[in-house]
Length: 324
Ligand SMILES: [Zn+2]
Image (cartoon, rainbow, N blue to C red; front, side, top):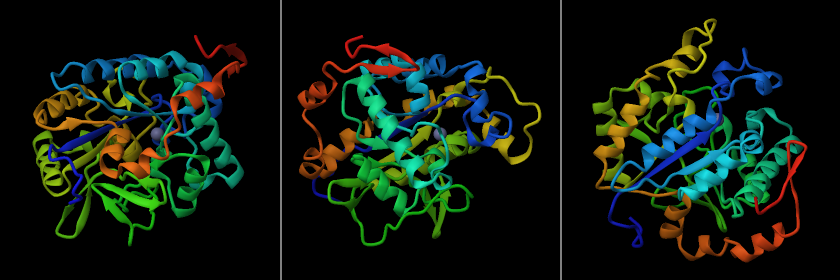
């Protein structure tokens, strides 16, 4: 354990902010070209999550990895998340799988979402999470080169066909963070190790599938070992009233819909059960664990303001001033 590691266990709740029709499992029915005309539910679902997080004595501070496509259409949602004290981070722009884009398209996707979120929030965006954890070492380098301070796209469960892999051997650990390079870190999603096997325990569909008592026991085991736990979910996972795709069957349908009517209550109980922990953002965790090397990366707020001063922000062809 690193000497600077806080003694109180830390839970890092992360939310990938995307709409119900943007998920990979429903891609055959909802290609990108149809997104514009589908009924959006991301704002109301995200507000429900914000209210849920604020309903505890020990307030939850979370990290929201927001899709640029969503931020472009709902900039007020980005500002609301920030105002409620959470971290703004990037989930890329168009929710394309990173390993299926050419380098130029990927670079644009990484840059565009970061710049857009910084322009809307008025603060530096440090973190990035890839759609469907589609990551590898070359993509990780591109994320670093775009100016992010950390990535949170590595899921060590390798039996899911879309999850990527990065080299972790020889990397220095700071709690659950891995130092990838000078000033650049990875915060992997947490999984459970049982008899040498990796079992997916980070959230999403696994959180909905696994019985709550068992899921809690697994988190306790992870916390005992790591003193920190990284959890993820999506706003559409607490929305049982979202339009159903009747044709979706088999594994994709199971992944998307299983226990979706129970997730809000389960999440409420889960956070309630771990009130002895602190719920921190990724940046708060890295600042505490890594210290000076992470702090050196942070641009002073005045620099961000200077970059924004006088510039207009293009939002869907219209123009919004930075001080809206
Ligand atoms: Zn996603």
